[in-house]
Image (spheres, one colour):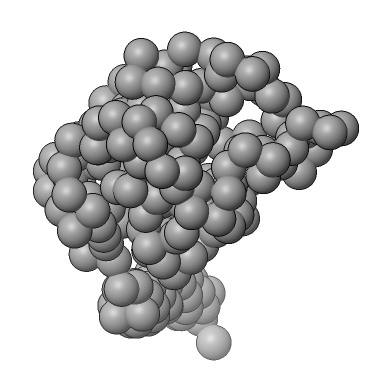
Length: 213
């Protein structure tokens, strides 16, 4: 075979190889894109949360107003002594949180806080499970900005190991409901429980977005 013919064949083989190496990755990339898109769509279909940052942040503004009210914040202090009254002063009797949140030694929450409200003006409110959050999961509200509290509430390491389902259920927790039945002489939260639950649910179901710092 003439040398010129050999050179031409070599060039053609090289070009063929280059073209093959160019087109194969395009096919791979197309396949990868289709797979990625399918996975993303599947993920969206499985995700029950409807992402809406504006609606979510607006709803949390109402949630935050309730959580910062005395009926909520008094049992979520930054220290280990609960707060008291509409002015959030330290509890007059000076009880301590304790490991389980129910007091220490002989001074237990249940000593004064009975299963139901004690009759009379400014007497101890009651609930069968009256307590502060435990020492291992203090769930502080006092001093938290809206941004900080929103982040904290959806963090299982800080919210009592609650997932989305448990957070939604928590709106009807017995101690949460007690905030709207505080006994005589105490102000109620700034909105009804039904309104709070609606805001809470909306915030969570639209993405649980935190307001800007």
